[in-house]
Every structure is written in structure tokens, then in C-alpha cells.
Image 1 (cartoon, rainbow, N blue to C red):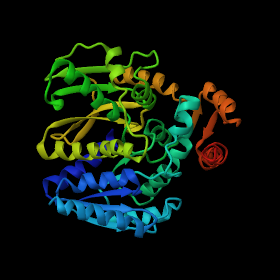
Image 2: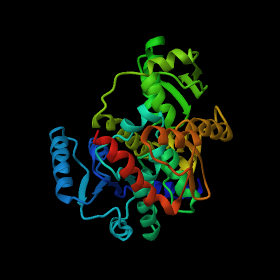
Image 3: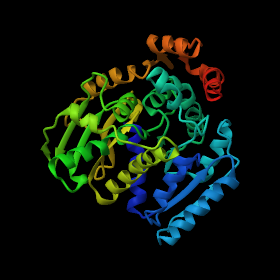
Image 4: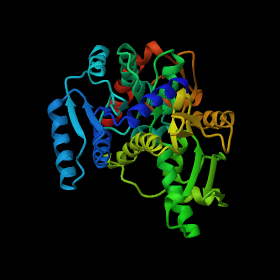
Length: 392
């Protein structure tokens, strides 16, 4: 995490000197809007919030309502700036914005095919999400190419399928995101609900959950209340003491009713918020804060990470398991999501996923997708799978 730690030290200097901290949100869809609202609600005058996308008029409307609502709540103290006409298919366009605004944090909440939950197509048919990785990586690749071109030093957070997207960027020798958002953070509160009710704990924040697992298990546990026969890496403590629990019973309670529309993105936006807020809190209060994040440091799957506000560094939390144990567990987990490996600049689907795609959708998915084939394969997925199935 050498590069990440250099970036954290830059943020630490700004925190200590009370300099403005610029947070850039790229893509102001539902995730971006929720995130902007949460950040504005901090009432933090040190934060400068920049939203970037193609349609300035639409973004400005969204910003107007967030700014107005937060002012009614007496919370609006952050500067908000809207930058339109940024084409995420054009690396130079993105790089120009990064050079001009010099952000300290960048959150990529963009989507190539917006307004559709990919899982609504894949889960019932394939019980796997990894098929969509070429779509998830496309704008992420462009943003990080622009990041390198602009010689940017911001801490970067990716929103879409970071379990495989960030490792793919790293394996191809590209600039890659520092953190991913989502997945693990969607499960941890549900686990806290169960423990709090079982033991009568009133403060959920006193319950310390440590989890190392990939996107697949977030979905299967959330939707079906089980771990597909795997013994996932899960540790729970209350005020430092280990809590005994029945794992099978706990996982069953994690399957709680949730909306299936864009309100679900409140969770992903909250995960983005948690990374930013945890870093700032750790640095401001000079303490350690644990977060959970997929794809961190280019690792496949999701991991617990400690932000050390005294040293201004990040590290994997190995208090319960070693990094090798977590890597192995995540590879087993993401295999269920249709990802056999990410290496040498290529993404490898499992043979099982390729066969399921052929059987369910009548199309032949390549088992290996090279980095230079991202656009081609992504468009193939849109044309042959997405467009075909949303018409039905």
C-alpha cells in the first residue's frame, strides 16, 4: 500500500493545516446524489465538493435540491461545484478536469449502462455477477488513464464491482483505484442487527464485525440467507470480547426485505461515504478506524483495512486472519461469481459461467478477456445479453 500511504500523508497535511479538501464525484446518478447529500449533511466547511459528468443542466438540478434541502436542515456549509461536458469515453476530457480541480478524493460512481441493476438479469439465470466485469471496468479504466495523464495524487474509490475491476487494472499495469465501495458493508449492519437483538446490545457501534468475502457472498447471503456451503471468514466482538454465535442462524437473519429499485443505492453511497469519513475521522482524531472494502490495493475480493490516523497509513487488518488466508477465501468466494482469475492483464471467466451463459442466453462468452478487448466484449454483452433481455 505504498502509493496509498503517500496519498494519505498528503491528506493528513491538509487536515492538520485546515486546508480545503476537494472531493470529486464522477457520475451523479442515484449513488452520486445520495453520496453528495451525505457529504453535505456533515456541515463541514473544510470540504469542497465537485460533481462531474456530461449533463451539466441535470446535475445542477440535482445539486440545487440537495443544497436547498440541506440548507433547510441548517447543514449546508460545503462549497459545491458542477462541471459538465465531461465525456467519460474521452480520457483527455477527464484529465483536463482533474488537472483543473486537483481533487484529494475521487469517487467513480459512473455506469456504462445506467438505470439497470445488472443482477436483475444475471442472478436468477446465472447465480453470478462476474459476467458484467467488462462493463464495470470500462469507465474505471478511462478515469484511471486520465488520472495518470494528469499526474493526480487523489485517493480514489471505485463503486462498481471493485472485487475484480481494481485487480484487473492493476494486473494490466495501469493506475488503479485505492479502494472499492459496497458489498461487505451491505452485510455487516445486518449481522449487527442479529447480534444486538440476540444479546440485548443497545449500541450497534459497540459490535465489531470483521469480514473477508467477495461480492458473491454479499448477494447470496443478502438474498437467500446462506453462504452456498462455504465457511466464510467472519469474526464478531463486543467491546473487545469474542461473541459466540450460530453462523447458520446469523446468515439466515441477513436475508431481510429490501427495495429492488434505486433506493438500494443508499447502501453503496453510504459505503463510499464511510471510506471518506473514516479517513478524515482517523486523521482528525488521530486514531485507528477499521473499514471494509473490495479490491483494496488491487486484491481480488473484499478485506478489512485499518486506517491509522497517527501514522497516516493504511494496512490490512490481520488481527484475526493472515492476508494469505483472506486471499484464499476471497478467491474461492469470487469463483462462485464466475471469476476464475485475474492475471497478466486478462480476466478469466469460469468454465461453468461460460456454459451457463450459453445455455441461458444462447451466446458464447470468451473464457479469457484481454484488457485490450474490454470495449469489444462489453459491447457484445450489451447487445447480446442486456438489450435482448430487457426487451422481453
